[in-house]
Length: 502
Image (cartoon, rainbow, N blue to C red):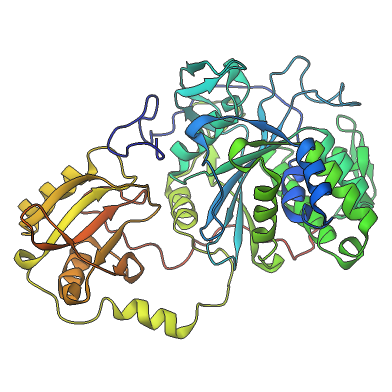
């Protein structure tokens, strides 16, 4: 996979496949992932090393192998998959979910935090979305590895729990569907929403109309309410009170609820109360399971500090664009709307904000743009070696053949695998190779940000050469690597806005 030798595709990772459809029906109870987000936001609030070590003891970790990163980088953009299951775990949860459920991915959110921490995007993934689940290596309690065969044209929620699949299988499914590199996961149980809302003294919600749902036992008048415990869980579980009474409308309500929970946790009333902070930290960590890469309290603290830098007004909530499953007469599932979804996935993968954030300093922008301005060498004078740093297997060879045969860059060679995988393709060059770099950038569609002034290296003939490292954003020889300038116009909300569910 992306952490191994880039030119050798690991078992079960066959690249992105087209989304297929299949008839599938059923109904699961909702699980809210507020606990996962809550710990990220407040874990550092109750200071003290010994107390933080105590919190670490509350957190459950799961080894998902190379599906997750081995550590956390404070200097890069990161993506965390937030999962809520329908498994009946925890006191008082016997009536929720399906009896005997293995714990499916009932509520799933992909949290993307920008590299400069100016913005974040929360992408909801419908549980009834039809997807292809790739082969998935898992480990048992003794450390023995088993590969669970993939499934085609099945509900997304079966990527977790079904046939013994763990959270790593869900991460791989999301990566294959979206092309977005998922770094870590956090998973919570039914108790999360009950304990967290109680710890902060209730979450404020607004209803556009009266609600009386006998299934979730939610009965509220129109207008504002403060909910906690069982009432809060009923609010996020109901799917018969809003919109078309389906999962997509329930997702919107959950997004509104999470935004309100985030506002409450970051309010002065909560942050200045040691009692509330300790209750909140205890509740969040006890409801949390994470991958081993972020299981240490020091790492979780780092994640919390980085996310706290993002202004609530620049935290966007949106949902994977979908359409009704054309294979069904009675509509029960959905499929990805490729015409709209690919722009959403590309924006997130390329760290493009869905909100209006302040532009980077003018000097920095000018310096990056200036790398593309100036004279360009003839293609025959461009000397470059090509490394695979996370692109699909064979990409370096494919690019070499294309450059030499189609673009006239004859002084190029395949240098094999890079030492580490990169999220984006880069071209490093010495100052006296700037004209060569501009020519190659024009040929490949590289942005100014992809050009890295540095040093040249020696090629196989002993001559100075540039280094082109193909990253995970590489889509094939001849496909432009210039990221989108702005995110697509999609339905979204932000964490600072109060909305009424209806």
